[in-house]
Structures are given as C-alpha cells and as structure tokens.
Image (cartoon, rainbow, N blue to C red):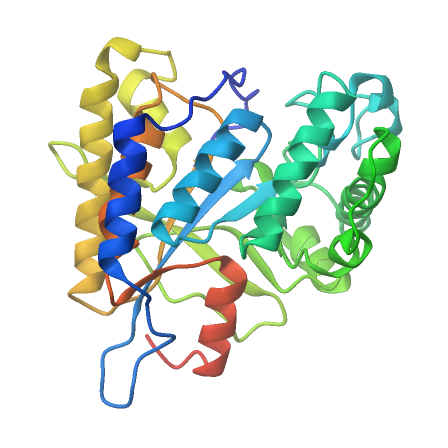
Length: 341
C-alpha cells in the first residue's frame, strides 16, 4: 500500500505521438461497437476499470481524453479539489487537524490553470467519463472521525460548485446539476480509510468507495449501502511478486521512487506484461472486473502511462471487453444482484 508521503511534483505530460494516435484510431475502428452485455448462456463481458487519482495536470487530461476517444474506454477521474483553487484562495481550505491553506499536493498556480482544468472536467463528463472524489488536500485520514470526513467532503462539494465563479469563468449550462449530483464515488488518499470514512460515505450519499486493496481481482461488494471496490495485488516482474496494480507502487518497486528515465522502456514493458497477465487470467477465468490505478504524474519517464496506452490500445477495443467507469460497473453488478463470485 502507498505509504503516506508527499506526492512527486507533477511534470508536464505530452500528447501521444502522431504514430501512437494513428494506432489508437486504427484499433478503435477495427474493433467496432461493443454490445451492452452478455446474452443468456454466454460468459459475462470482461470489465476493466481504469482510474486516475488527483486529475490535475492539464496536458495529461488532454492525453487521457484522446486515449478514451480513440479506444472507446471510459475512465474514472478521482479529482482532488485543491486543484480547483488558485494559490490566492488556498486559505479557504482547511483539512481536519491542519492549519488553513495546507495541502500535501499543493494548489493550482493561477485561475487560468483552473479554468483549463474545469474545461477538461466538463468535457470528460459530457463524453461519458466519470468524475469521482479524491478529497481535497491529500491527507492521510485513517484516524479521522465521521465528522472529519464529512467536513472534507463538504469542502470538495463546495469547491466543485463554485469553481467557475471563483476563478472568473463562465459556468456552462448544466454544471450546477453535475456538481450537485454526479459525484458518486470516492478513493481515499494513500488508500487509507477506516470506520469514520465508511460512516461518512453513507451519510454523504456516496454510492461506492474504491480505496480497498485485495489479494487479487475480486468481485466488488455491492451488498453494502456503500459498495466497496478493491485495487488488486497482481504478479509483476521476473519473480512474479505481487504488487498493487497502481503506477505509484510500481514506481517504488522499480526505482525506489527515484526518477530513472533511462530505464523507462524496461519499466514500461514490465508493467505492460503484468497488466496483460492479470487481464488474461480474468478473461480466461472468472471474468471479475480488473482495476488499474494511475496518477496524473509521469513517473520514470512516463513508463506507466506508456504501459497504460499500449494496454488500452490492445485491450479496450476487444469485442467482448468493456473499459468502463466505476459507476457503470456498479450499475451492471447491481443489475446482476452481485451474484458472480
């Protein structure tokens, strides 16, 4: 599990190269439209859930949206609300137990940066991606009470509702409804939860939590008031040691969290091999949803984003595979009464 630590500084992303963009488009066109679900007597469709924590760097917003457009994948963006606040507004945020204006991941540099991000958030939502909550200042809340978490959730909601006006932008029609009712899921910073979190999620009306970790892919627990999804431990590397299927954890294993861009391709290939093996195990087996987590930070020279793009190109376009949001996965699982095991 990710140890509490300040996130690495977010480098600028890069749009896919012309060759990669062409490959993405070709793969999507060859795959054709996917059907909506399994027919009677057929195996269930394989779901893949790809998510991004933080969702701040605007270049990586553009890159991910291009990937989704080309492959038909729909992503879940767990947004940190401090990236909707410029530095002049930072004292308007106060995390439980912290002084006003503190954030482990910083704030947006200026209003122009915020408005660009808001445009990406709105474009993502309008095209079928999901916006979830990652809280605000990326603090470890394992010891927070229910009321502490409710305070954090309230500040997230307030930041989302007022982001356009606070930054001098023109709010698009429909934003108020989106900000009030569209956010249904949460992932805790550092994947660190607790009883206070689970009580607050239910009280705040959220539908699911995606903060857990499991020994391998498991069926999400949809029997609770707030459904629980878990990032799986998957085999990785020459010895097949298990690791959380998330880029930061791979970054720590591969290079002890020190940037090593000279080995970017090696790390990308190791990561892609691990993703492929985890996918094939489910695809040929029980077809439980495979969850993969990323951040809007290019670690080790972009190795993990490179692996993500290669994986999505070859996987999300397959005719019996759906790369879907958490909300869509939850709808499908609830329709089947969570009976798969």
